[in-house]
Length: 175
Image (cartoon, rainbow, N blue to C red; front, side):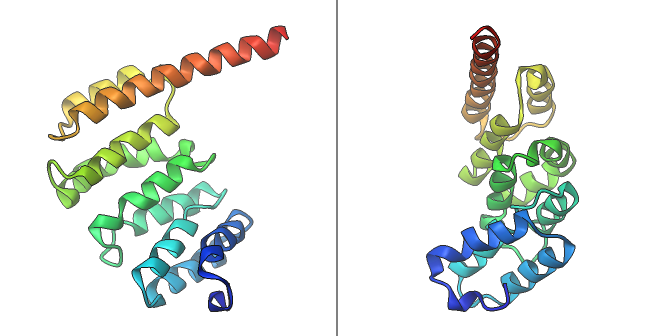
């Protein structure tokens, strides 16, 4: 993290993500500083993505919160959400964070913006069918015009994933 310019640009995010995976609050601060000082948007996005590679859920939440600051362009704020959704530790915090920040996200991104579809879609990575009713009710009480189809697809992916996992558990249990 001391000299990311010495790396091939294609290796910056994976190496910084590995550092984050094994890192702590100091690592998070270093990545934030690298993000702020990055010269190009590509560099910024690499560091922003790496900031979502922590095991520590407090640092993941800190990265999500950072995505809502003026340092991060509104068109890039879905990246940390998607990266945290893909992080195996992200499921512990992302749904609660999304519910808390939904109105602000909706306001920032705007109705009908395809970026919001990516945010909605990310829910399928962290949810199982035990959450389906809650998610459906949440969508109903927090409308986001332009995402209706994605909401339906997200709920369907949750059901498919849950069924697949149940079948695999049975197979491994009986196999």
